[in-house]
Image (cartoon, rainbow, N blue to C red; front, top):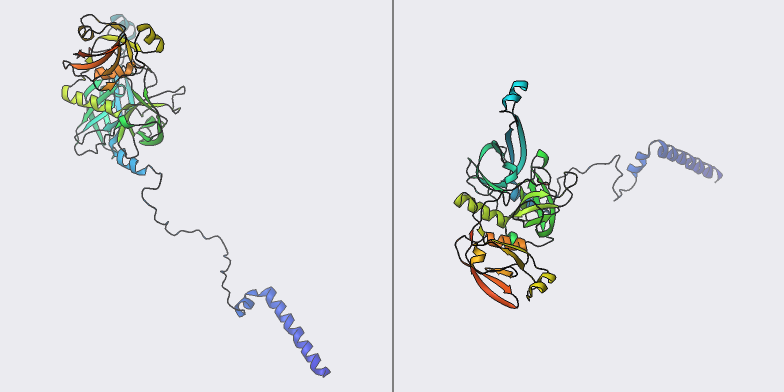
Length: 389
């Protein structure tokens, strides 16, 4: 019995020794002998997942991809060149001492929007003003010379024509239905880096008294607009044109979140006028006015709370012929209500010269309908303005 116990103890000792050696030097042998485990083996190193990403809905929720793809091909880059003549180039005394003065060439950058498949473009007047040569770079890389069809300095718009057909014309949106907070995209060629899309919202509507144009009814946006964006497109989330980017408020020369665009409704009016008549024909009635305030309303003795008060009437002008007097308050032109001077200016400008129009006038405590026949607005001289982009 004792002999059997000694043999058993020796075999146990040998087995434990073998187990210890294998577990230390060859643990894999023991794992192979054990039962299979459902748990995955630990990897030796991180394995990056290079499998194709799962398909995502198109467009991505909240993305402006569709709007950018729709509108971007319709936005072009505009390069201009103009020759700057020396002010004393023709002065014989200057030529005697200094010789012939050499002219200098100045280049400019801007943007434009294709509005017709037949090669018509909209841009800002200040982009192409006084240019000797205008070159348009299309979205597909083609460079084509452009000719000026017509300009309208009063609204800072111009129409160009390039020799190409089948172009991707932008869709015109309804800028009259805009509301503060609507999302928008600004597309253009800032700083000449190439076409760029920025996003923002409508910050304000009907901005005026900025001293940029004679007719001001700007859309304000915080979408980034920088030098070179002038003449580019402001579009909605469908890619439809809402305005032509034209200026910014800036103390640094770059975007500070306050940009201005000319409404598409104004651009459409100018485009049609330039194509039809070669110039923009606007109505004119020959009066001077101010926004109506409670103090002015009390002084004039009128019941109106909104409108514009007439402060001056040009003799023999359309307003004088219609019987309008200083102190009258105009509250409506045709079907459009008038709340301030820019609205009156725009409504009168939209009238067709020679076509009689009804306007609502408050005189003292009485409201009356007056028939006025506007004349054509005489041309105005526009001076340069800061903040152009």
